Amino acid sequence: MDPKGRPSRATEGFFGRRRGKTIRPQQAAALESGLGTYGLDLSAESPDELRKLFKADVSAVRLEIGFGGGEHLLHRATEAPGTGFIGVEPFVNGMAKLMKAVNEKPLANLRVHDDDATRLLDWLPQASLDGIDLLYPDPWPKKKHWKRRFVGPSNLDRFAKVLKSGGKFRFASDIDSYVNWTLLNCRAHGAFAWQAQDAADWHRPYEGWPGTRYEAKAIREGRRPAYLTFIRK
Image (tube, rainbow, N blue to C red; front, side, top):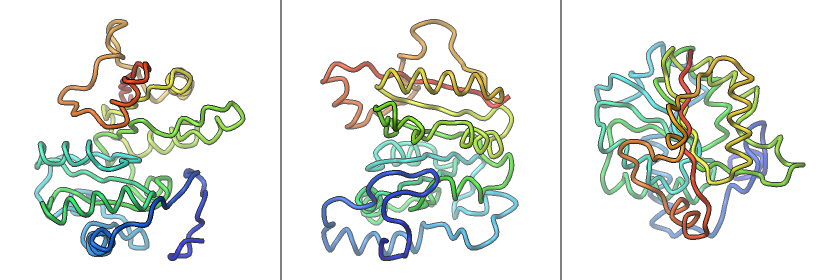
């Protein structure tokens, strides 16, 4: 168990470590303070309008699941102050890095959740999100572990519930088997339409894409990333 009494390895939608190297005192202080400011309280009833969660006046709300060190989330939230962003990251070290960054440069259009994303998805109101990003999730490459992949019927049901009609689910990965897995699962689900006009589309980064350290490593090692976009019907 972790200090908050949560399972330290897995819940329904999260498998893996919650902690890495011991964080520095400055990061620990930023984490505690930042979660007090930006963290969502799922014990409270969810608002009828997600815009009420933010100090900024926002006209749309997007969710990023598993933001890692927060590079992409920070970039998007900074460039679009009129959009609210919710970031989910159970890994303490990644959350600490993000909280240190926003401690130095606060963002009024950001909220975070430091636990299993399925709990947040179940808490969110129906048809409340304009977009969901799942970028370079753990691929669980061994076939016996594929059931641990975040994309699957249950979580696609959750996505379908919380996305508005016309909302986007964006998925990026450098692992071919997970890309194919996601295409097949979304096609089988029926609530999502894949947006691709030609063969080059799914290898073209999203508009305004800042790149990530993980992506750069994948490219150096010869893996070609794919960028999929699905529209909620």
